[in-house]
Length: 523
Image (cartoon, rainbow, N blue to C red):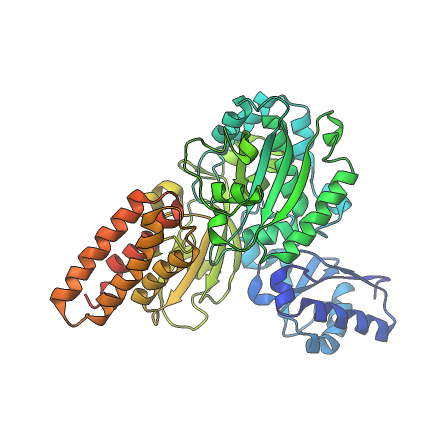
């Protein structure tokens, strides 16, 4: 065998949840028992979550993957890893082949996640060796207008759900004036609370310097000197990784008093939320960052003009900032060439719920739900037919099979009354009770509402009651139909009268369930 055996075991939360640390310990023990020299790299996850813990071994043909590996598998796996490192393919049943050739990965178009799973997330050398900091280095040689032009020309839109053009938002902040003696801010919304989503977490744990680089570029573009990353408390590993990455990037001079030797300052701070879903709404997040109760602010003023501590503030989510280094490094036109229509670039889709091969799939806009469900996901984990897919988080619509061939882009989905959102997909098989899921949407809103506006606070509670009356009276058509009419009126009020998306979008899953699966309501 070679002098040094190099193995990769993810340190991502998904891998840790199924025992990655125990697998790493078992590999160290095996190396010790065999007197082998071992370099074990704790990388990010490749995003093939059904294969975690995924162990990779460096070979002359590239990395070869084995998974899912449990600690008890290691004694029998060890000879296969050693032989593989010397260039001899094994017949071990957990062997998945050369990692980059696994179809789930090979068919993706990874721009944002191209380093995740490849590098040691906290290694500055690894990051630089794989193209890191190229966007920031390009940005320091440009003036604000040139940076804004590239971001605008790329067509990048916010990946948090609203899909507002990032370049337009950044221009608004760049042209706004801060209070004398105050500064503008760059804030990353990492309160990834949508069910079925995990892309933000994966990126912060697997490639944290990419987010730091993107936020530093934003600061240069708008003239901000302070930045915050607001991370949900349920992501302790992401908080720890990003905090350490910020410290290392600051010590190395990539951010701090003299960003990349540009003479401009940008100080970045990590803050942990307290677990409120509504703090994923940008103004509630600002309230929380300021040490207040996380409740929604009325607009106007927009945060771009009066945001954190009353100053002009850029707010984007993790995936939006993470797309920016590629744009600056390779040009807006390069990024713009991905996607369809007005939906440019790529989106990391997250396959969750009742799905055989759950994980992360980064593709350009324009593929279909059916391609994701069957081409990548392999159908349901239960083996039963797919009944519905909720796209865009808990406030997204349930998409029936008749719409699975609609291209996944912002405009096409808006045309059918759906949202792409953050790219989260939750799959349900044919045993799902859609009336029950509609009730859950209202109940979720009632629990998570900040309580500031009446349609959201009261409407959601009444919504639970009305849906209960519909299902209890499913065999009494007159009463049932009256309640259905009432539910539709209630949803219309919530959509039109709520202050933010929490109350304004909760009717989306309710109405889509009612419209596409009426039999589940007794209709």
